[in-house]
Length: 371
Ligand code: GDD
Ligand code: MG
Image 1: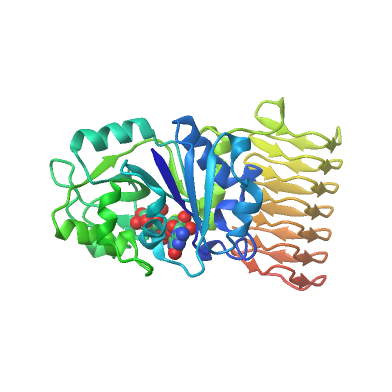
Image 2: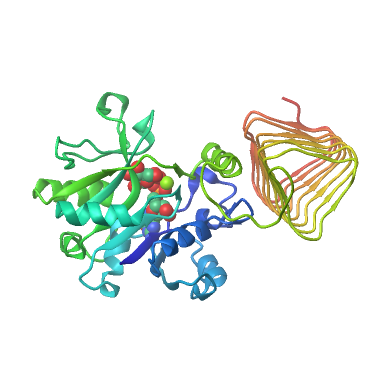
């Protein structure tokens, strides 16, 4: 079975992190998130993979090249204009044979079993099988009501509260028979969710839902991106760590210089060549990237720190995300799902909270912000 992974979206909800890096290339436990998806497919013997990108598409090609180092064969197709989720697949249909194709949204962390999914699809004689996941609030997703036989009866993308009749949502992982693409227009922006799926249902073409109850998360918002890190660190989803487990669930990569007087609590990860000074605390559920410097008595709780960040003395960082090359002076306090873009500089004694988002390269002078 071949797979197409859709990675052409702009990742708007993750700005400013996605201003210069496409969402699936963001680090996840210190490796590009997309690598996890490739490893998952490979573990089911799916190695012929088409990557449909657009926004900052070169990043995928430059980093993953032909995929051979991961044991897969990647074909990169970069759209000049976004073609939408279905348009993107239509655009590469010439690369399919007649066999079933797996289509994946590129921002999903999951452990979906593709063997079970394929078996289910074949047994039902489905033309499309949608993996379904049950969530409390389906309004941010595609709602997928089923009949008693497991056939999809309707598809409501981003339903309003009064349209919510089920908790099953589209998990963004499909199997399709390539023949259904004849109902999709060529060269136009067209979506599965608002276009092809409703059109197939109108034609009574069988779409089935495959209920999935393992780990699943769309990483496309700061909350979910942070939560996905927690879940990886807490072991709720399998993931390959780089680094040595120096004490229970504290992983430290090579070349670090960590003071004997620093305190690290698991689960946490520290990347390569980091330094952590006396009396600094790295509390649980924290991921520190490569080449990060953490000065004396700084405290980091439940946060994601990208590569090349410098954190001054006595800083406090809680439940926040600092992108590549951020520099913090001393006594800076960052809290409450704040997100600092690449190379932001914050002078001494600023207090940034309430989910503040700072664009890349912003500069905040000393003593400027206090919420
Ligand atoms: N190649 C290409 N071209 N890819 C695209 C395009 C495009 O024009 N537009 C979006 N994508 C990719 C995105 O990069 C992402 O990986 C995937 O398609 C889904 O887009 P999102 O923008 O993340 O959509 P969503 O999260 O709001 O909703 C989708 O996913 C939900 C599950 O997380 C829908 O499929 C929902 O129905 C679903 O419930
Ligand atoms: Mg998404």
